[in-house]
Figure (tube, one colour):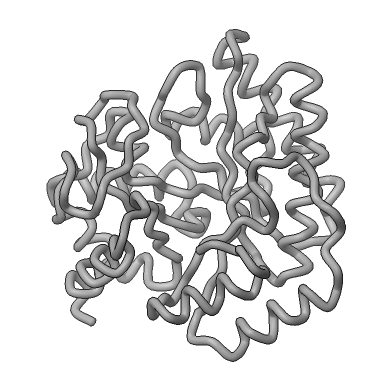
Length: 273
């Protein structure tokens, strides 16, 4: 949901669509830093949220952040992420989705080490908050990190499985990176893998989107629910799976006229509501 016109506007927009959960940026996602969040703005956001039917708000960190980048970018990324965690805490938002970043030619192992050390710094500097950082599964484009569950597990293990780290599963991304999830057997196999590697309690969010490209394409091209290479069945399984009853499932499909309404209507029909 857009925050144009004020952070609380995202709540109002989500309410108009009948959402039970929404995802927002807490600031301009294309800027490194922002001015401190005035307390009256945070209070208005919390008040509007409390009067809505929205159960969960998830934030997404800036796309600029790369904790495994070159030194200058890495320093700015750490500072920016610290600020975002604190903004989430001020707004009562418990989960912040983060792209794991790119190793920029340094290699996966070195990239994961840099990512993990930066995350440790961020968590220490925000230890007074309860905000959990959710590492998003990625499509495997270029030298990006997080395209395999094993890479995310490596980070969690490096961090001694810190309770303030979790995972956001993006359906387009896991499919594009090579995981099969279209059949009942494949979906259950993926969920069992998530449980074994992370524990289901660490799955803090799903991003629901079909894929314009085939499995293993390594291309991050989101599509409308049921209109891409993944098809409808897995989405019906996710939204009706009791294991995700309290886990926000966020629509991340292309923004076109009326598309949110169409996609949400289809997902609700799949769930039987």
